Image (cartoon, rainbow, N blue to C red):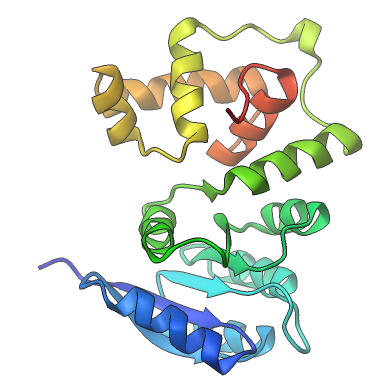
Length: 218
């Protein structure tokens, strides 16, 4: 049997942590190994337990979730950070992505979405709700960044298909199944997309593609 995904929860509300734990541990492949009530404690518990995924809130006493994310991703690059928060505001989304978060999910999401998000970030993928993607795109549009559209090589039809499915949160395997190609071929298309957009990750590729008008959130 594969080892379960080991998770640390950080939220300053005990009842919220209890609810998230119940959701996660309904699944046989996820186990919550520790809980933190603030960002500093979350960083300490990550160092102690070395979980696969840290699920963090943004607003916590003392050290915020943004600073905790920055420290965790810098000190423990194998630990993925999933932000689960009620705050759906532009500066938070971009700041957390820049801090190294692998996912940004609203607390209004259902239990199945949370389970999928934990599994996805554990696989090294990026999870971004459509609301968060839109806000990140808006911030990038305001602050600049990305390549000049005139100088950018246009995507192929197949690359656009891959991009649209990536924006929906599908894995390489799922994209391959839907398009009738191998996951290795999907990865090759992604590599080409990254090169054209100057992106380093799926999230950067999606937000840059949105900015260039290659895809939309519909």
